[in-house]
Amino acid sequence: MRPSTILVSSLAVFGARAAPAQPKIDLDNIKNPASAVNSLTEYFNLVAAKTEIAKVQPTAQLCDISKSQMPSVDGLLPPPSANLTVKHVAIGRGTQNYTCDTSKPDAPPVATGALATLFNASYIACVSQDLLQKVPNMAVNFNFDAAAAGPGPLGPMTLDVSGHHYFLDTTTPFFNLDTPALDIGTVPCAKNSSIAAPSSSASGPDGQAAVPWLKLTAKNGTTGSIREVYRINTAGGSAPATCQGQPANIQVQYSAVYWFWGSN
Image (cartoon, rainbow, N blue to C red):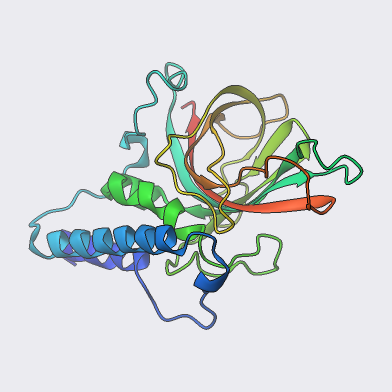
């Protein structure tokens, strides 16, 4: 198979594909449907452009994830530590979770963690950074249940599930990448740094703003080589301003790109 054909075939996973049960987007229940449609349009326009380029491109580099360039976080988050390389890139899709004391409607919700499925986006990171950054904006608008037995496609994309993200306690995010598809370890983390998401970041289907960008560092108990994790290109996930009118437990839809850096 010619390299250009390889790239076209691989880009096909980014676009619409027939599947037994495709997630749906319900514009009637999205607070800002125009923004959701714009995010989808940008995504599909990029898919079309990349596919057309691949058709006439004479060669295409095969993916070496260690050589992928994470978008610059200079001035936003501390850079990756020396001697670390990219080991994996994933799209996280799920919910940021909060609790409310319903007896105190003016109090802000309290963060309790997150629950997300991680989809293998390493090849996208190799071939198209601009497309990768658009995926969370698209994916957050499609119905998705991270707690379901089978998460299915990520919106119109068909990517392999590479792991799962949840919290061991309210301060310890955990990434399980020790799966049959990947098998690179498990990573309990501590927050190293945080910065508010750019104002241009996409909101979630209920209108909540994007959660902050993070740098996380591995804690004792890590298996495998992962030492640092970045959460960037976030979409949705922020809590309501107060508990007014909210239930005791709140799940806010979000998506993000996760970059996993490890030692050799």
